[in-house]
Length: 131
Image 1 (tube, rainbow, N blue to C red):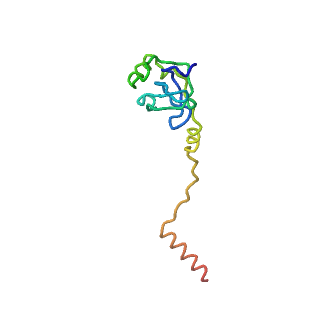
Image 2: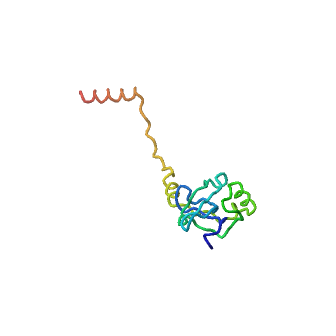
Image 3: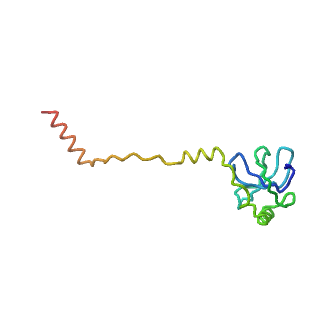
């Protein structure tokens, strides 16, 4: 698998879009490429990405260099790649958020006393203390 493949489908490994699928649209140099989701398909905006932060898959779509989001979307429909790619590897941060988001079991709430009940209890204690 060569990095120089424009149209290669990838999975982002880090950042806010970790675990999302994207397509290589352009190659800037040996370390950076331009990727897109497109945004309305996989929520990945067209942006520069470090190749170390991408997992390359075996799938490739036929697009030209610098293809627009519409062209990429049409190529993905032809390949039916959105359903054909393996499920994304979930990012460690996302897993930590899921664990933290689980609600803890609630302890049984104590019945609150009304103001009148509190006053009666206080009077009873005062009377008992004065005897």
